[in-house]
Length: 332
Image (tube, rainbow, N blue to C red; front, side, top):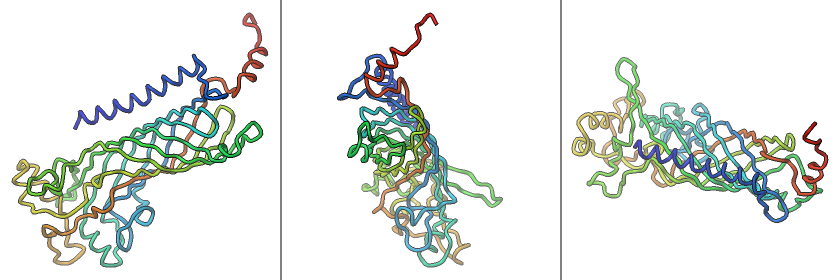
């Protein structure tokens, strides 16, 4: 697990290093794309981060996106980015972000049978999240109308990209005294991932790929500084960010495949049915639904981005030469 985490941060380092390399190269060699000089911006972003998965949700049957969004579980994502603009309508971004994700069944308001089932399930999770990605920014109005006579301060744009993210879900157990302890869930194989009796359930990796899609609006405070508001959705290829996906298994399998210590924890944490929601409720039997395998987990963020343009701010060689001729002699 530590090797995977180190590999992830090495990937982040490579992304940023390559970006800074091209930034420096743009100053020393005046990278030219068409008739324009490439511009480079560096910046930071911060904003709320939301999880969309099997745990939690609102009234009715669980579904996707905003309908099942739990605002009380909002977390903050922070990040840094470097963007290369070869022209006015396209940018190539490299970025790295960190944040947290959470999900709890016990916060659901009980109004019907669907909510009751999920609340009775009584599962929870939390995880730190790290991601690195590359994405393209497209400014449609600049593509259609861009030119010397069209330089608006406010510019809408779309984003699409690909990245890698790392997670490591934990679940909680609370003792009779009200003390809560958190356990990493992947080593507990709560749904029998990797067990020979369930060959269709493979071990899930804690480092996964994602696809990013979103949109935003960029406002130029000055030629040097700009701010943006951006919504960025991450489509993932795993249903185990919250460690919940398919069905309950026979708890005896934990004794067969895990150490006695892990087996004892797994038996308690994989099925936390609580009779406080339904009097006399029993634990779920093997094969009962635990999650929805038809929908992978996802997450999205709203970000406020602050960017600073590096290097000279002149967009063409003529303006650069004019500025150079207007400089004072070095002796002054």
